[in-house]
Image 1 (cartoon, helix red, strand yellow):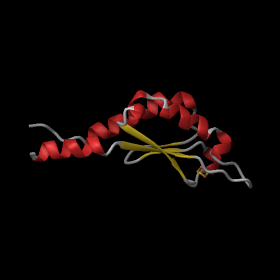
Image 2 (image 1 turned 180 degrees about the horizontal axis):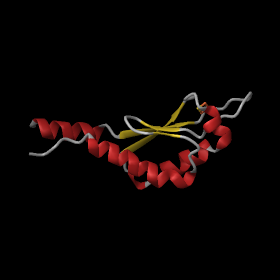
Image 3 (image 1 turned 45 degrees about the horizontal axis):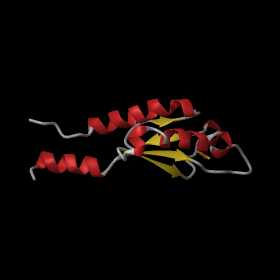
Amino acid sequence: MNAAQSATSMVMTNPVKIYVCTNLQFSSRSCSGQGAFEVLKALRAQPEVKDGTVSVLESVCMGYCGDGPNVKIIGGGFYHAVKPSDAVGLVAAAMAQQMSKSPVKH
Ligand code: FES
């Protein structure tokens, strides 16, 4: 296996990760109270998530509770007030993030 194949293999076995804050706070606004689980469900329904190209994980509080639901693409954007209808765009952004790290073929 050459270096390019090794890097490609690494990308394929390490899908880009999207974290959704699903924290619940009883004393103030929190992502779970603002629709985080609906966002999580919409993201997990995307084909790229179902086939393992993109991984969607729950997260603890990200520190922006009043602006939730909050979503972070690892190595990419940090999004606030996310809605289920944003799922397609978020997965596209995650895929673009992953492609930007793919090895350059010579
Ligand atoms: S509860 Fe989601 S950022 Fe704090």
